[in-house]
Length: 337
Image (tube, rainbow, N blue to C red):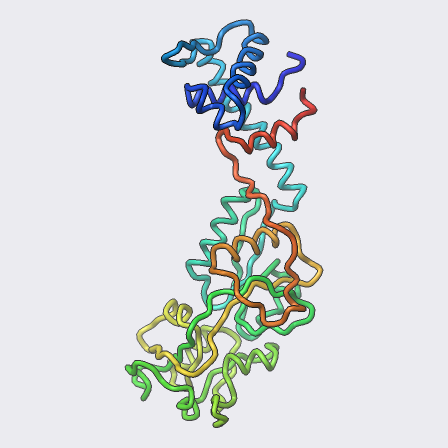
């Protein structure tokens, strides 16, 4: 069997599924004459016909059917071995730990599902990170990357795709004076203490989550400092203050003892993907691509020196049955010829 070419096997597999020389040629991006040539070469090696073909139809011979039954799993295993080695070489194996705050909404989970489908050798794992330390898990290596609320002004972190611009919502206890209203103006926050993240969250980040003054400059009373979102919601339910959240997070954490009121006049809440500067890997690049593609159109990054974006679109690494991408396999296993 010296000189066996992978392309001959691909030709036979395509023909066995299409049962049509023209469609098989289109599928492999070659001419019909090339399909005939490859089939003749394979049948010559075997010493018998694998397909019966007439001007009206193409069908497998009994030998062809047995050969197909044995070839398909062997071909799939070979393809999988090459793709597995390629993924390992690119770092697309193992576990990708992704931090999130509050709630990983449907778009984020959709991006992770797409990542898993494209890179089956690498399993994304979600890790909730506390409000009081939005960047610590990334710095400490507990997660590979994190989806956090902006702003991000950390020189040791890279800010990647920015997405999910959402109106801010005030969470108050049921029965609060604001409860049941269609919206509140940001200036009215001067009469509502705001629950805020505690240390070690940076001051600029805490002040975005719980601004000390209204847009017009009126002081906003301090509410309790909390480490986690659940601590904050519990403080709100106890009547100790209100809490600002983006609308999707507020809706996700709905409960009977609190209610949500849209706030007019505040900057939108926005999410971004961050990772350690100098620590970008093939897995992070693939995640960045999935988030940028599936979580919304690209947004302007607040500070250009912190974008760190470079490089092109990663290979999808999706295994087809047999199509033109199988030509890559022929190149990768050329040494078998």
